[in-house]
Image 1 (tube, rainbow, N blue to C red):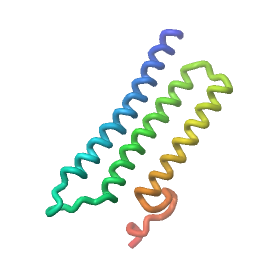
Image 2: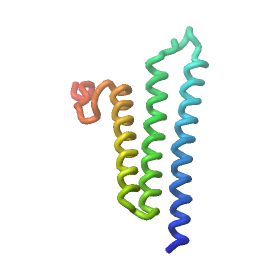
Image 3: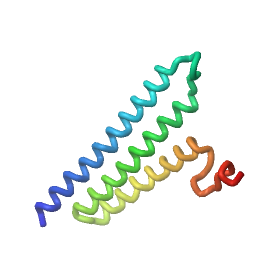
Image 4: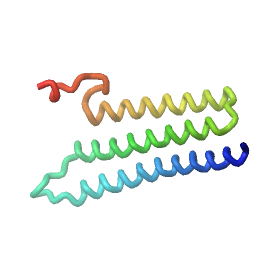
Length: 117
């Protein structure tokens, strides 16, 4: 059983690395798209840059939460570790919700008016 825990811990660390890499790659792609956009053909848009950055951060946060959950489940589930995980998930969920509102301009549970029309 100890060997399985070690492998799952490696998987959790791998997932966390993937989350970090996705944020970095998304940021690089968003910035390069913004910088390399020719002003005459497609004007640069700060709003599009913010949306692209927000999407990459959201994706990275979701992956990081998955890694944290897997990492906590594998280790000894003490009350302290569970509370730390709960706080981390709460903070990342709040950040995700804030970024989602910033990107979409509405809360996820609100109806999209453009779909209804």
